[in-house]
Length: 277
Image 1 (cartoon, one colour):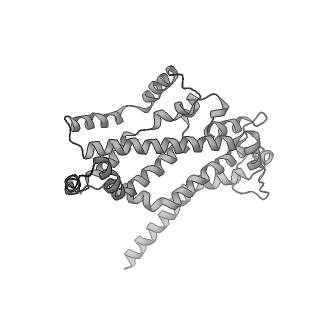
Image 2 (spheres, one colour):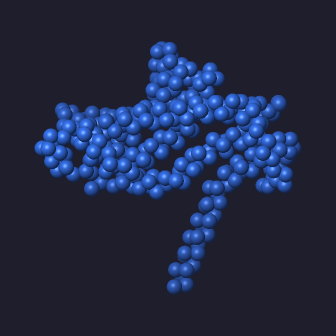
Image 3 (tube, one colour):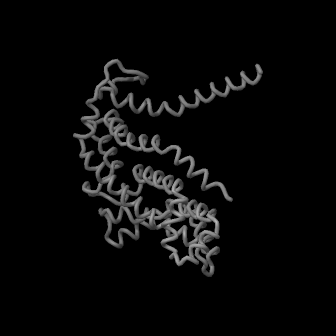
């Protein structure tokens, strides 16, 4: 009994220590966001607390650059991209899981092989394509390269494949179309995975940095990633880190709330996608 209690205590100590390690960057982000700009730059040794917190940095984050507009652009980009991606991956996953056509398994294997292509090569190809189509500095150019995902198609396809074939055959006997079967049977059964994919895609779009920075140089189409960089550079000769951290707090808050609200669905969806049978 003593050994078990000691072992349990050690596990809790380790978990608490690891939680502090993981949460420390968030603490440092919030702490820096409430430090005065002059006081922050005067610190030769970083301080882990402040006796005179200020909210001025949050005001500066919205007045230095049009952060509100960038948030709206990011919201539009995220919502449209996520909605289009859900339509594309749902139809693709259904085709690979239920429809019978020549070369289906080979096509799916080749499709999965796309995951082996480095992201940098895809970015270069997408940039060339979007530029040639004259879609730079447009929401279309921002959205199109992100409307599909090989990994999400694979995850959803594995979920669809777990649904018994008997349901599909029974539905076909009753005269149900493939689309109606997908909408009425498969999507409701796999709702936890779809919720998980939706949340993960929202987080991915909200945190998107490389592609928006590469494809837009018009402030009317800037996302929050562009805004953070602008705030950082507007520091009167020095990087305005406190205002930048305040912007990061504002930008991160919706994602934190989203994750906390749907964390159970995320865990359930991932576990379901990784279990066969």
